[in-house]
Image (cartoon, rainbow, N blue to C red; front, side, top):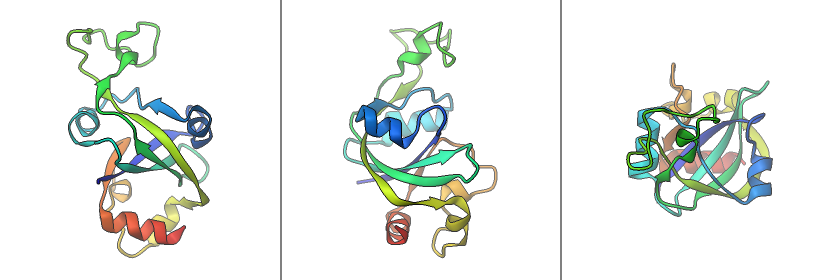
Length: 150
């Protein structure tokens, strides 16, 4: 079992949207390292924190679970989609995603400011200066520390 933090702009796709949909492909990622996480490392059953970014108070708001292995990101093949990549083809999709399913909302959001103050989370990817990855690994220790905050 591995653990992850998945960032999303709450206005584009929120934890409430994931709850409504049940399962969704985590599409639109156009960073090679993050693509590699989804393509090469994320496994069915892995758990993740859903993190709302681009809000007044960015925070971890829920838990999701990886529900599929890697699949081509269809948004890369759709010329009408904002994530279209003309270099991607059905034979060579370039971009991959995984499906994630809703597990639960947290009892309360865990704001970024609280994460920064919590002992044991100093090396967490989301807290690193300049970190802009939309998916970052979370260690088992970090997972437990954050769950203890809930």
